[in-house]
Length: 345
Image (cartoon, rainbow, N blue to C red):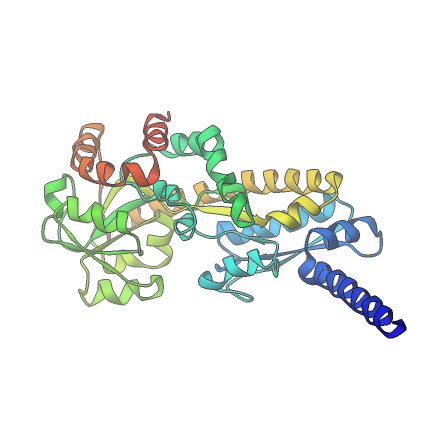
């Protein structure tokens, strides 16, 4: 009988120890709260992303680190890992769910598998301009979309715009939907983008970002869609003669955190971290706008690229051509969400 009681006591003790061990792994919510209460052990936020430090996202992550450590008096430390130093595109979401990192800022399109409504950024000619885009992101619809991943252990904290997409190609000026017929364009993966080019009578091919230049150079594809800054820094203007300022889609990011980690932060620290993120978000948006405008001016003045800017009348023709795409994805994305985006001013 004594041995039986002893065994039960030992099992209970081991179970309790294991539970405490698991709770302390990965810097989770309980660990974060405990760390927040110890002056000599700051909370550590590992912020992983896949781009260079010189990009708007890279610079904003560093600004976030600076602001957090300043506002919390060192009670929270941010470790930034750029250029896929810790995790690549495919792994970073899993790492965040596991709380191996506490923040990431993936491309919005990477979240489509978790919530199809994030395809809103790929929908062609939905957002009228940059101001309309930000109004949507910061309004009730955009904020609701940010928090839509709660059930999956993730929480969206901010939208970090990277810029509008524009068309380039090596064949001819693209001023009307009919001009796209017979051309082939590089795309990111995504059904909306394939449907977009199909509606224009063009072909599409998914090609990794790092392989786009040679694909344009050797004629595998005739054109591509990207932000001004990407077109400029990737030197596409060397192999693309025509640029259409179309503002037809978005290439933006969402800052995500592990929900358990976030909820486990002491309220005072959480408030300061969010305030730092808000400031870093403002900085990121200003920098993104500045770099895109500088790249556009550089290309426009280079003499290498022929630039055409769609008029309001031109845009309406493209909107009409995209009606089959809107109808096809209306149910997946949400009719109300689409209408809110289209009506944002």
